[in-house]
Length: 360
Image 1: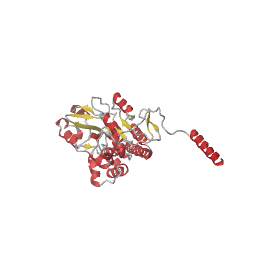
Image 2 (image 1 turned 180 degrees about the vertical axis):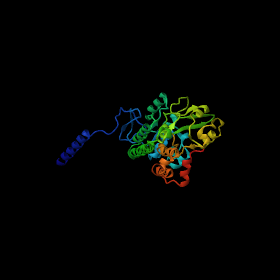
Image 3 (image 1 turned 60 degrees about the vertical axis):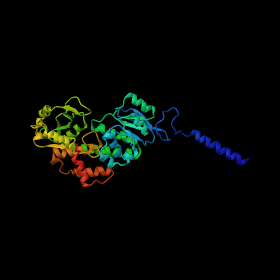
Image 4 (image 1 turned 120 degrees about the vertical axis):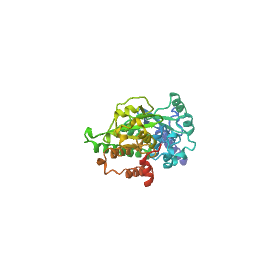
């Protein structure tokens, strides 16, 4: 009898402890998240400050743009990318992060909502290129969508890196904090070096892209505008408005001649050759002087909304005001960046390939 009473007491105590302990499992009434962890869910904020519920442990993600696949990989999560903007991923990206192709062997593409669902992604994130119907499909499949819409300034890009780190969680979150610190630090350092320049000493600059039979440029709403200003330049197209895709604003040769930039940077060697060979641009100072530069490109382009934009201000500064950046060794900076975020030691040859930019 004594033994029976002892067992009953222990059983009652265990029941009371269980009843008083807080529940860790997701409520049965909450929407199921694809592949959600047994411990439940957590909340993250999108770029507008809205709360989005995601699985507590995120192991499968689908960035909607190539730049965010690069950021995700740089934060150490290439093995979590199960769908991506596949056409935007360069051979260097795939070679640098071989785990990506293991995670997405079927090449699931985020432009196709059926692909996203088939990939088993738990969270999709990036600019809101999905329709309301597609968002409803994702929700019905238990897949969270975190909108990251604001990508035009250093602060907005830093916020984007932070959000991606928050989605990935754990050590990835800390890695994102380190990336933001480096990114902001390089922009601030560049701006400090050029702060005392008089207006007349600042170089008129134009980002000009040759695509098909037309040119396009960027105004003050593009992230490269901040890089130009920090590096001691003047974006001659800052107030320009026109039609175009994304941040590329279509511009005619006549307008480029009127702006007469002293330095032009573009996104590929092919584009540079087109600009140099165009008789309509022959009187432009940058063309006459051959002062046209190709933006470097690693796993992604530097002069767009990318994590490697952390290196762009110093690169531009060395071109525009070499005397103010004489101590900056871009090859060393590239190697250090890839050591930390590409998880590899670059050869001298690979470093120079990155600094030379894309051929087309």
